[in-house]
Length: 193
Length: 193
Image 1 (tube, one colour):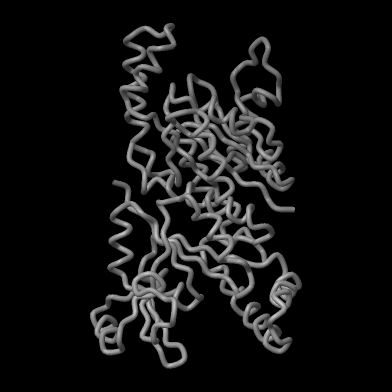
Image 2: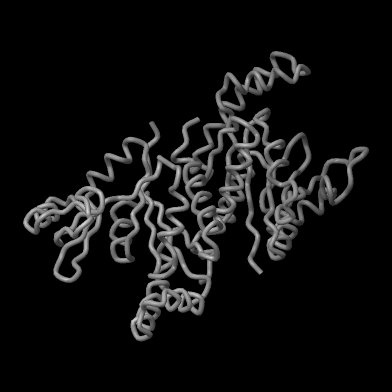
């Protein structure tokens, strides 16, 4: 059976990553989201092993010690990370695993797994991103401005990704990601005559 | 304007390269075949600048001397080659240029232009290729056997190409080439945010 591939997807808040990925992954059983591990407390409605693997701090630190995390970060006093074993189990079943992660985690995965397909999703323009960030209506202007500033910084990392997709429309961006997955499967190192 | 790309396509005789490329290129004005130069005599029905650039031997040798050929070969006492200038003119107009060439020429272009997109088209199996070679009906068995032997040798070069496509059906192979062109245009080095 053909191995699955790791697919790293990053992009600034408000760019529409989630919507594009939903469009790419619907009706495609060969694609699955990675489930992260976290030490933060489980919240109402969350299911262990679906939204996150909820584990305690000593367990997370032991996994780090044993080099079992594809990538990890600390945020607001809690650890977040991607357990490598679950990813590799999916890959060996021919399922490609989508990691929707921020830039620092993405760079960790790229270094560790150079065969990963890395995709940065960028806004058509920062004016448009500002509109999308404000357009939610529930964001105070200073928070939106700060998010925009962070987005501009994040987009400077796009060249570190193998592919950069401008999210003009969801259907075009989704079609481009599908084309990338098709093309990557045609790379000679993954093809046997 | 976005530059065009050089697209190298190789594959053994009988694999169906021409049919697949015709399918990919129809109704797509952003793709054009490269026109080779040759020192062989023009034949009835051929048009200079369309089928080949017909030039004499001293002119061809002068072009070689001036490093004006993307690739070249000698065959049956005549030179064949791809003048780089005509290719670059098309690229600068945003047109991608398809070079349907044999392996040795392809390797020359890959060395000279590492940004070229190289695609090897392979048969589903050598049994199937043998059927396709014999199926033409006009090929003596010993000639077909020799072509098959050459095809087996040629296919050993597939790993030197960036992409390998198995030509199961024309429409699937054409769709894969289109996906490759879409994906290559999404590579971060060709995208400006």
